[in-house]
Length: 322
Image 1 (cartoon, rainbow, N blue to C red):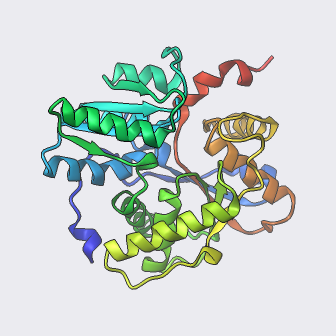
Image 2: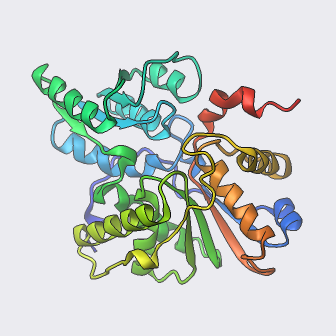
């Protein structure tokens, strides 16, 4: 299949482990497993490393000298992009939303250590500032390679089609996968990979920010674009996408009591660290569903850990235990 012919630039420690969480499972009454994509290895790991293997290979094949992308100030995607650029000997320019702020904690600190130049969008939209940064790079005689928000295009999503094949090859029976979903690339790849390789369980995307209708359409559209890109005769309808928006709380990046409890529970029972923005929210959704009877005793639930650990330090005052 075309997936096997795609070029990759090795960055990730693969395959990532699948582990059972026995103490958490005992507490919840449901078997909880975890896929450790927080352990992909590039600058403290995360799911974007898989996407960047494909995206970086494409950038290098076109003789680009700069990786250019965008995200929130504590973007895990931006931190991993900066690390990928450093590994490849390339420049990196990150367009971050909002006004300039101190770069002394979390992912912002790491962006600097990894050598990335940061452009603050200020009052502009991230997309407008990204286009302007691209033109600036061209005018400066650089050769920028533009990576979309979250690395979520058909090439990036293809990495999670491959990740689903990797997971199925690990032979771990699973009834449901729970994963944080925002830009949609990871979930789109998993949904498409499930159809391509015969996974019959549910893929339960927990929205970090978009509403159900927006995220379901986004994931389905990207899954279909990726299917065409990979020459797979598969079509995904928005109605087939689980895009659960019940746990958005006060919005993107706003740490609430559910996330705080989930982070402390995973850490205190299993020594597993979650981040405040993505995995903490997805885990809070998982806990709610188990406690509400949506997941039945005997069900085997896999939590796909997408990383994000450096953001913990940016939320230190909100997470500190009295």
